[in-house]
Image 1 (cartoon, helix red, strand yellow):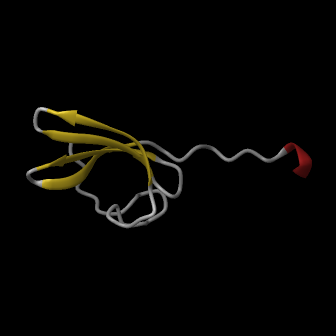
Image 2 (tube, rainbow, N blue to C red; image 1 turned 45 degrees about the vertical axis):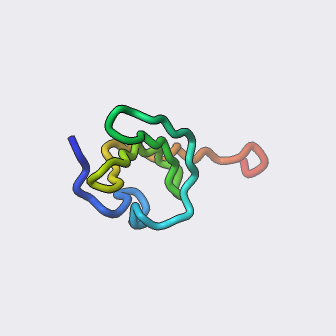
Length: 71
């Protein structure tokens, strides 16, 4: 299913806005698949092809745990 959202549902940042960290890029027969991490930490799968770039899947940001020093 293609995400119709143009903003990250976790932090509200626009998908087209930087900075985001590119984890990996893979060429495909139809374009390119890009695994990226949003500034909030959620992992995204982006497809780049003749129709543009779109987020087709995304995970949740990692769970924040208190540091041992803060206990």
